[in-house]
Image (cartoon, rainbow, N blue to C red; front, side, top):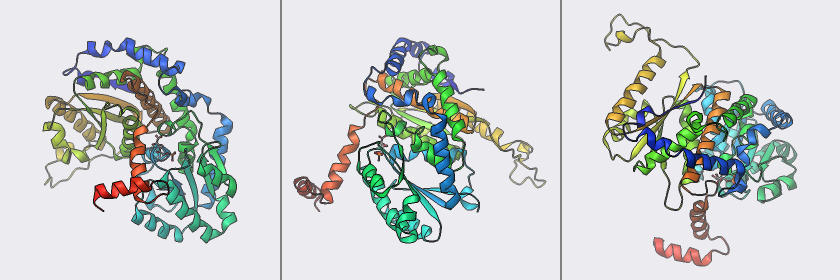
Length: 446
Ligand code: PA5
């Protein structure tokens, strides 16, 4: 069993030889990645991260996770972007769809991934009635959204259990020495985990940023890392282009992009993968969307969205391609029952598993979308397990770096995310931003 990348359903739109023609370029990108000689090479720590995580590091993450679990009904994970999406994606992919409604076990909640007043007010209200701990994550230590949420939560927890107990229930994950969060953690005596300098936010899921919340949620981080290790081997520079899933995927999407397919829609057939798509959107959008270049990453959940976005994909503007991520084996078995009345006329499905119906929906949709002019890359993993999710995450990271280099951008920076922050601060009257604030208010007529 392995992760497979199938390209048959793009070959009505591009030639296999087009994909193959990128072989040398892709190999050059692979050398830039492993030799650390390409753009943004200070941020390539994620490449060998899975092999470098030690047993001691995993043990210390598990120890803190178990301790927080033992004394908390909820653990609130505060973070945004790369300090949020990896953990959220893995927890949703591996968890029971209804775990929030059962009574047992510590639940992981998220905060600081928006500035929504209602969300945070409702969260504090919930936490009034429950025991909880906080994991606050920020690499820079200065990001506004998590900083606001953490202010609220810190004061709430201190008010509830006192300053000393609160300090023992707060864990900070941040830079080794820089940033406001590091200073705060050192001053207050919080336990901390370090985000390595050479691992950027969106590539940080296999650092404590992802591993601690995932362990708190009760999942096997050792299997997750093991899967990533296997992916690291299978996508390394020594694995030939034809057998290397990351090279195949990176090449195929870039050939499609060159043919005018500027939007890539990630498709899943299980809602459990919804946040994997969100994680992937951040990874690819932030890595490639710069210098007026880059595929726009979008996402849909099928068959749900076949009843909404399906129409556009079938017959709208033809600038899209799909990347379908499928899971070969479900974790449960559920057969469709016979109904003697057969009023819905579905007795021809009697005894079939839901997964078989889902699979036929998938195959039928790929052909329909192909007929409608939409190329389709297919990626499959054997099952939704910690191992295969770890594998999938590393595979996407590797393919993203290759893709970014094929596009000749720096896949590891994000200069564009600063623009909104400057304007927001100016509008809010941050000292030093007075002139910008005045000009903006005039422009906005406020
Ligand atoms: O990928 C990135 O670098 C960003 O999305 C960051 O993860 C996000 O902005 C949060 O940054 P920080 O961890 O510094 O608070």
